[in-house]
Amino acid sequence: MSINDNRRIRHRPRGSVIAVVDVGTTKIVCFIARVDEGDALRIIGVGHQSSVGLKSGTIVDMASAATAIGNAVNAAEQMCGETIREVLVNLSAGHAESHAVTIEVTIAGHQVGDLDLRRAMGHARGVERAAETELLHAVPTGFAIDGNCGIEDPRGMFGQALGVQLHAVTADVSALKNLTTCVANTHLGIEGFCVSPYASGLSVLVEDEKELGATIVDMGGGTTEIAVFQDGVLMHAGCVPVGGVHVTSDIARGLTTPLAHAERIKTLYGSCVATSTDERELIDVPQVGEYGDEEPAQANHLPRSFLVGIIQPRLEETFELVRQHLEASGHYHAAGRRVVLTGGGSQLAGVRDLAQLVLDKQIRIGKPRRLVGQPEAVSGPAFATAVGLLAFAQHPVEDLSGFTAVPQAMPGFLGRVGAWFRENL
Image 1 (cartoon, rainbow, N blue to C red):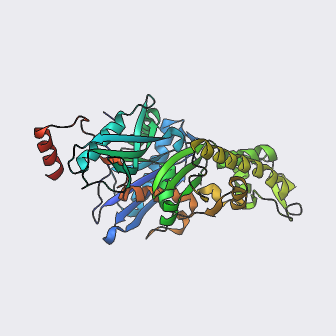
Image 2: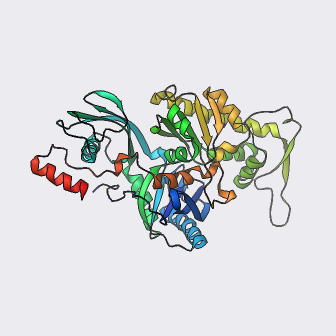
C-alpha cells in the first residue's frame, strides 16, 4: 500500500481543529487552529523550539528529532487545551522532485465526472518514475477535451478523450518513512504531507502573483527552497543545499568565534551589502577558547566590513545556485520577473538588493498572511511554511492526489453502474 493512500485531507467543517508541524533544520513549529465561521482560521495553540537531530532538511538522529517534535506539539496543546491525534507535516524539497506529466484517458463520448479524474489519477500513479519514490502532489495545470486545450474544469463536458496536464511531485520513500516514524514516536498520526516551498507560497503570495507568475525563494536554515507558481497553481518545486546555517558557520570560521556568538553577530550586525560606514563601525567578536569560568570573555574588535565580506559571498553563491536551478528546470523565464523572498534568511539586511542583482528580477520580502489569534512573535517570514501548511490543510482542492485511484481499464455497463453508485451514494 502506498504511504499516502491513507492520508487524505478532508473537508473542514466549522469548529474542527487543524494541527500542522513544520519540521525545519533550525526550528520545529506546531500550529493548532480552529475553523471559524466562513472557513476563517483562528490560531489557538503555538509551540516552537530549536531543532535537534536534523541537518540540511534530513533527519540524522531519529530519537532527538522525535523528542523535539513532541516538545513543540506538547507546547501547542498546553496553550489551547486540546489533544491532537493527527498532524499535517512538511517535507523538504531536497527529498522531492518535480515532473511534468500528461495523461490521456478515453471517455467514449460520455460526460466527464470525478470518476474520470480518478482514472487519470490511476494513470498518473502508474507513470514510470524512479524506484523508491512516492507521489506526493499531483496538481493539474491544464485540461483538454479531444485535443482542445485551455479548459479549466472539464467536469460536465462531453468528448471522446480527456487530457490532463499534471505537475507531479514525487518524494523519496525513505525520507517519508523516517519522518513518519519520528512523528509516530510522539504518538501522533500523519494526516498528510506537503512539500515545504509549496506551503510557503500559499501563505506569502497574493492571487495576482500566483496567476501572473512568481517564484518563491524560502531561505531556511539548512536549505533554500524554491517554488514556481503560474496560472494559479504550483508548476515546480526544488531546493538548493545552502541556508542560514552555512552563513553562521562561515562567520564562526572566519572570525574564529563560537557558533552561538556567530549566530548572534549575524542577527545583530549582519548584512550582505557593503555600506560606507562599515569600516568605521566596530563589533565585538568573542574568540574561541579565550573565555572561562574565572575570566571574562576576551573579544576582538573588528570592523563590520570584515563581517560583510564573509556574508556577501555566501549569499551570492546561494542566489547563483537558485538562478542555475531555475534555468536548468526551464522556469527562469517562464515564471515571469517576480521573486518573493521569505524564510528566516530573508530578514538579513541587504538581501533584497543582492537578490535583485544576481537574479535580475523584481524582488519583494514576503511575510505570511496574519491569522486571527496569531502571536506577533510567530508572524514573520520565518513562519511562512507553518502558516502555509494550515492553508493547504484547509483547501487542498487543486491537488488530485486526494482522488483515490481506480482501475485504468474502461468499465463495462455493470462497472459504470457501480461507479455511479460510488460517486453518488
